[in-house]
Image (cartoon, rainbow, N blue to C red; front, side, top):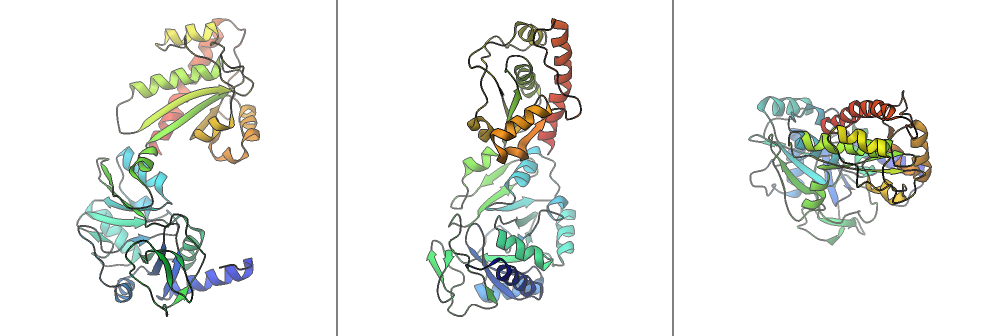
Length: 369
């Protein structure tokens, strides 16, 4: 729908009211269009009347659709780092999470939504989705309550109010859709959401046929960390070496950290300073093969997190890539890591002491997220 901002806001507010009152809204997600109604026992029965009985085997009949992660996702018991990472990194997104949970958690979530058991849960499973589409999330959020939804198997809505471009089984396709229809053109992915089964011990299964494949889900289990200083011969190579040792020595838990370093004013191909090499050698790390690199936009894009040695380095990174502001942090915002270049080896050892503590703390924060 091509609407001016005021009309768009009015339509979304009206759709939220329809959901809040127990009605039906057909609207887009980033995957396909869906039929949405308020998450309640009555809503599940209404949705079943509109779309037919859910054709599901060994999975909850309905999926709870959220406008925001809080508070529902925070109620999940996710002791495994892999389970936490999958939930935290894949939401919002084109995924339907089927999470195994203790009975107490299933009971608490159903009670918080006001639904009886057996609709959004089955056995030890609960099905959750947080769409990554501004319309769907705004409407659900505005209704003040989670929703239930069934996909119509269409990547766009047609005229007059009929689903087009069918790519899967259509569960709703009518010339006279109930409730309200919001037509926002073609969806981003044009395929249904991907179901990911998650177990308490960190095992998971990515089902085929959805918008996300297994390699994309696996990608979130690896965090690429980039350390940045000025010349990439002292501080950032030392941080990189310390981080490699930390990652190598920690107990396996299914998560991976990849590390690298670069400099905002570095020449390419220079070795690390001799004092940096000796200092890291004393701590069991080898910088003898290090070659300096000039920071590039591609490096910034590929990194998940960038730790700089000083706040001014962080500003320099953000000048290169303003859109990276969300992932650039001074490794210690209050105490910049001084440049030891040209100083005695004792200064390098002091810097390494600082970095060992800071690197361990920052990387553990990534693992614990």
